[in-house]
Length: 183
Image 1 (spheres, rainbow, N blue to C red):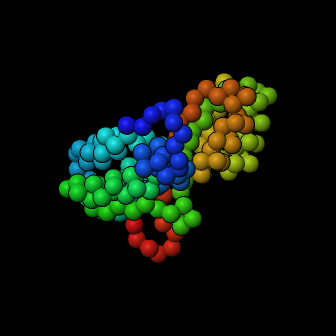
Image 2 (cartoon, rainbow, N blue to C red):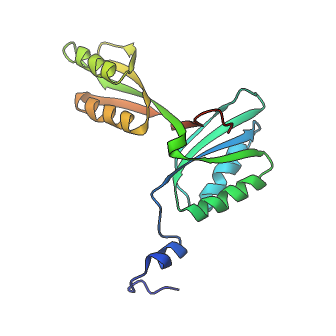
Image 3 (spheres, rainbow, N blue to C red):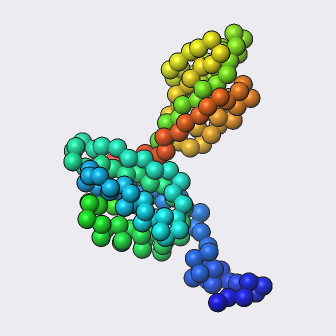
């Protein structure tokens, strides 16, 4: 046991698991499309104290296989341990920790923004600047769909919040390796 009043070196912090790399990990996990698989995969991370930042699941070109895209922050060693344990799960077919520089990642967000006759056109113009799409227009609100990386979504949110952000929903990140390599 370590005395909490004592200063620790970086090596001691890392050994104790208290040092995070700040590196975002994007895990692409191919699984059999069967009930309970998502629960087992996410439970493995939960039991080891990882906070999952985003989680997205969807079908692949093969209806028997789904892709789980999971983003989290963590030190390299614990991620390696968890991925080794994931490989042991019966329904897990393939796992890849995608390198950010070699990955195309996107997120989708829907923003319901309060508008009146004067501000409706301003919000539409903002949507155009962000290559967003107006998907619904009401008398007192407008819904805009924006797709892009996290910083783009957050920048759009900051700009529309002063108009009155009624509601917002984000999908979580989906990612794929660049080039012809399979994941």
